[in-house]
Image 1 (cartoon, rainbow, N blue to C red):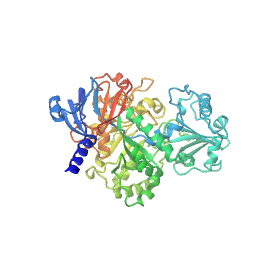
Image 2: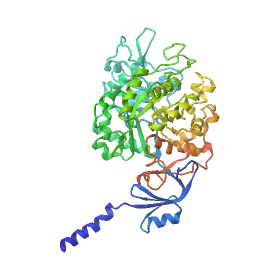
Image 3: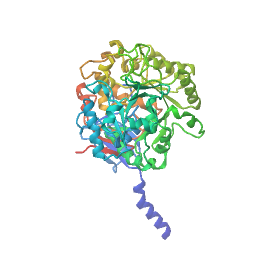
Image 4: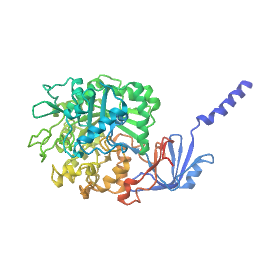
Length: 560
């Protein structure tokens, strides 16, 4: 009896620690995102990591019981946690050790000289020794007064005995100094790989600019961080996503060697955000060789979602693949020029068929309409239809033609749009293409009318991960000069919010797990200081995140 009593006492004292906590949220608008029209409820009850009730406050109190924790919103607005439809989580981790030109604490970089000065200051501040690596992020040649790339010689002038890599904000090109080219075993006699380009100076020497697949050569030569270094940057990266209200992130181009890290025990202990991994097709043979590899299944908070193909390049860098010519020609001076695919159509079809046969989801980066045609023809050749519910995702779908919408519907494609382009590069695109073409960038309203389930994304670090800015660009579609790209493609706040919640949830087969506030779904929430549904368009981008809650636990709060 004494033993039994001791066991009972032990259970009594330990049960509260392992019991699922019940929380009642009330005191502000709660937008459920459940349905095609806006719906708000007075209160929500969660128990552990799940939602158990969403409705009126009286019903919530009856469900929660007298011992529930009350979370008063104090007038703030609660929504489902945002889902990142496409960005590069691993890049967020890598940026911690590099020079971020978008860092607001830095002097503005406006020309070649100020870029050189920023790199020199960074080398001195970090005391980077000879032979060390300097990686510069968020570089955009079109923001420089010279409207051209910095060159190998100009980077050598900064430092000839350190490896300097300047990554273009599109992530589709970079500039390397001589030391970096040597580390990658590139010489003036080297030839680029298929789908890649080396730019050269007047004497025919490499000028340090490498485009598309050619840039992979430099990435392969860069030193790999240790496990401890990766773990040190993982939490900081997920906290930046949490700070913007995301409860789900994506690593949009996972290298083969990074899969083991993200799904391994060490990272599993630290990951709190759900993370979808898209391994690059360049490692496909190794992935296919593992018969036990599971896609679509979480290991902790990470899962392999699908295979990422890169069909073309960046439109602002004039490497996107089109059926029409760029007015400014190619980056190397060719004219006429409409770009070319990064992977041969036959090679893409063969590889995509292997992915489809394994039952894995296909993600294809396609910016230009010719690249989108490539994807459509491949899916049709494989017999993929909407009825099969394979949900191939065409990332960006940037310069889609109106006639391609019907093909998306027939195949069951989920377009992952990128409306931030209307702000950052709307003016640039008009230098290359007619108004009618630019006005159909990320045609979210037409896509919705065609019955497509869409998402919107930042493609971080190409643009900031701020979902409120994305919400605004979907509604305003205006450039810094005030030019509106496609006023008829503007959508309202609720539709724009769907592209951050229910849309991306459907695109990854998790519509019954997240993206809405509904009983049975995960208790993933973002609390905003203002209600996007009641704010004027111009004020949308200034809404702030107050708190992010992942599976019933607060993971980020704004400082008072």
